[in-house]
Amino acid sequence: MKKMNFKRGFTLIELLVVVAIIGILASVVLASLNSARTKGADAAVKANLSGTRASAELYFDGQNSYDTICASATAGGIYAGVLAALRATTATGAIGADQAAQTTGNGACHDLAGSWVAQTPLKSINVVGGASGEDFWCVDSTGASKVEDALMALNATACI
Image (cartoon, rainbow, N blue to C red; front, side, top):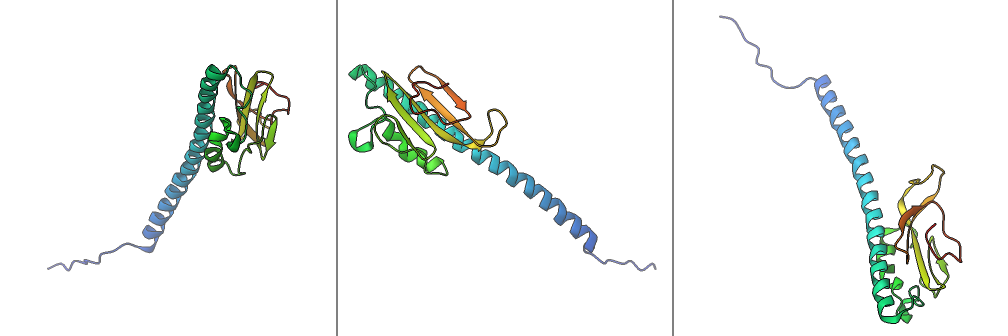
């Protein structure tokens, strides 16, 4: 009668190959997850500023003026209503909330000459152009919504 060897188990090489494959798959998944988080943060910024535009138009319908769109929260400014959400989605604490030509942190809001424009940084970098630095999401009273590669000037009245 023939003797059979019933040794069971995995060799060290087989275990190392499996661990290496799991490591490679984990790194791919983590890289994709980070990209999805960045895109999600950018989508939140865009949605918040879009909501600001809708609120500003409702305000304009009632007041026939954009004069206090960028007012501080204590003055009841519409733009101040999304500041907390924007601060939660940006790394720098985002935008401040002073009257009119306000620029604090890396965002800005201006309500000049019967129009308004607001801008805040996106979490993703270098969407526009290719130079290093931040890209900003800009919305204004003309209906423009777009990515810009620089912070607007203090006297800006529209996304450029």
